[in-house]
Image 1: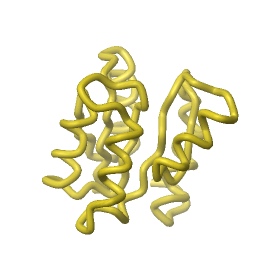
Image 2 (image 1 turned 90 degrees about the horizontal axis):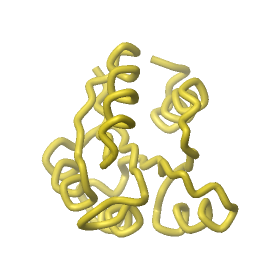
Image 3 (image 1 turned 135 degrees about the vertical axis):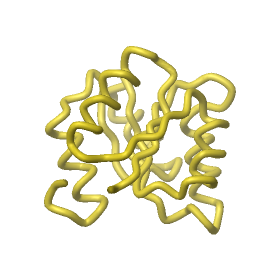
Image 4 (image 1 turned 60 degrees about the horizontal axis):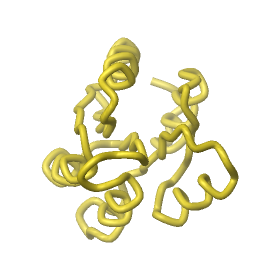
Length: 124
């Protein structure tokens, strides 16, 4: 079962997204801030990381930079999830090392396609 690390501080977003991903056959692990996300990425070595960018303790940009600079986990695909929908915001996420970008509110079908593409699968 593919493992997804969901790094999201908003409880409603975490609950909705994790339930839907579990129904699609993913094993979902949750971190509530960037520092915890980095720790869990190292401990779990998930197949993909869904990273909110506006997080407490350590924001998603910094957490992604640290993930991508760490030799053991740098190859894990990271999808930025953010309410910031301007072109510059997308570029900031990609510059931080994110492999893709999606805006909130999440369009679940589109997100599933991005997850599948980064994992090299048609869909789970």
